[in-house]
Length: 514
Image (tube, rainbow, N blue to C red):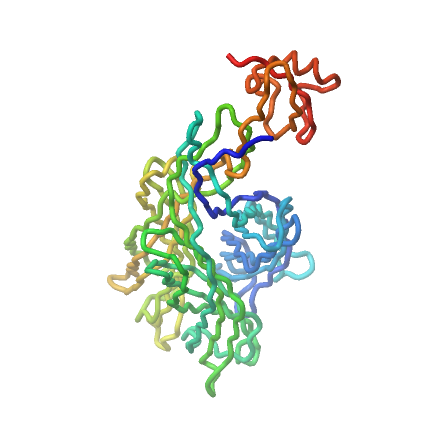
């Protein structure tokens, strides 16, 4: 009977990658030019973003619900051929086949828009048919406790130093974001709310003893019927900041944290006699995972000992940091917009990272910020107008240990923005923080504690019965028991040495050691 070896071990809780798959989803829908907007003569550009609204796991499959948002810039079918834009959304549901996935596992989803086409409908001149091709990637992971071997006293071992994130704990908490806000000055009052869409961004996380502090921003887009005789449909945006904490026993400064935010419920109601004020009530669920980065010298081979290996398939954090970006841009009022008398409000409608490149110890980023400016026009009746401007940027964030080929996650957030009008130009200044996290995917086979056994006692001239284990070869068994491959084959007629089956029992003739 084999005797157990007493190895030196360390217990880890890792986020093991179960499987990662990609699938294409085709989104089809129809968008309509809103009633206040003129007919379309020619589409100039279509900006598109895809947002994940809900993710669910069923056996061997990940189901993704999301929204495709389109910003269409077009030339109006009017004598002056003014340039207009419209904002439309199409909901979609896609799925990714992920063998091994179960409902209790974790999942991360990324969506890449490969192609979008917008063509005028043959049925209605103000309708446009949309077809989009999305690439949906799903990575499914599970929390797994393993006891890895770091040394086997008295035996020759091969080992490797690896970086792992040892899960300390994960906890969840709800936060309620509630506030009142006014309908923008350039928008009509609200008669009926049709739809509310939300997007949540985690802007900062900090760890103190046994606690994770979270700052974030939730943006709502309200689509509504205007309180006007023609009842046109409008939409508006509003952002709310929030700060919350989650108690995570064992958390300490210097550890890594991942926070996911989900919108559980959102309700927006009109308030006030003139329907020009709204109340938003949003319920968020925040999930925090705290991990301790460790460097561990794990055993990968043990000479003269029977063992099995466990495959570690993990993603470890290489580094995380942020950088501030200051952007300044001046431009003329775009045609056919009137000149500016007074700026009322300036907001960042969208921030998009268009390129992220990891080089040695650094991440280089490119992107843009879409700015929306609401202003009083320099006309006799002083109407309120709005204009849009795209500001491009390039920056970098230093991440020690980062290398080409690693994974990168980027979270940009505008911290400050203002604009003014001077010398016939609009001047915009904004301060943006860009958070970057670099991770490394790693697969390693390591020895686990309960699988190490000393070889059976095998006296010269005798035979033993041996049960085939994962990774066994006749060559390795012949060396272990001081015999030859031919001797083992001769003792086991019908056994294919190129196709040993785990669990089968073979006879091994014992040879003289030395």
